[in-house]
Image (cartoon, rainbow, N blue to C red; front, side):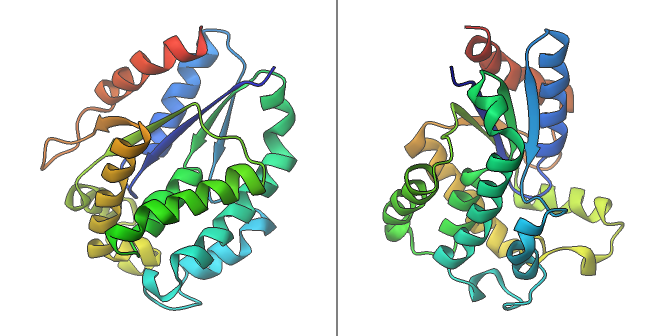
Length: 223
């Protein structure tokens, strides 16, 4: 019996890692079999092309690598993760929490394309990762929605004001704004859960965001 795959998605700095960890701890406390995964897997050989891309080795702007090429870099990393780390756990009925997944390609790579091309790209992407490569599709996706200006402030604090430490996505505010528009489109078209994470100028309290996510997750994993 296959388990459940729950994805936490959002722009850089939106709190994906924090909310994934809180959700993990909450489910562990309930005695549920749960495992965390995160993408990209920077420590893995399978992320080599991802790291080169994000470091600007193929161009110093996100659009220097087209949406289809960049998507394959991330897809290969996910395939390796699935086969090496969590396939058996998931297929035995475990709950897998993903900090980013195929959904990140949907958000970040759509932003490189004209809006009228988004449906065709999304069909191609999901066919590639779920049908052709054989990765499982998520049972639920939570989009942590935060204004790019707010997430940029948080990232500046994370990197202590050293802009050079940001990758090519994180440095490009206009790109992040386009990515948010793509994420909102995907949320509406694909039925993702929309979780507001700021009040327009400041992030909302972390426990408040966690409670919002938990309200949807519990019926899914305890059914």
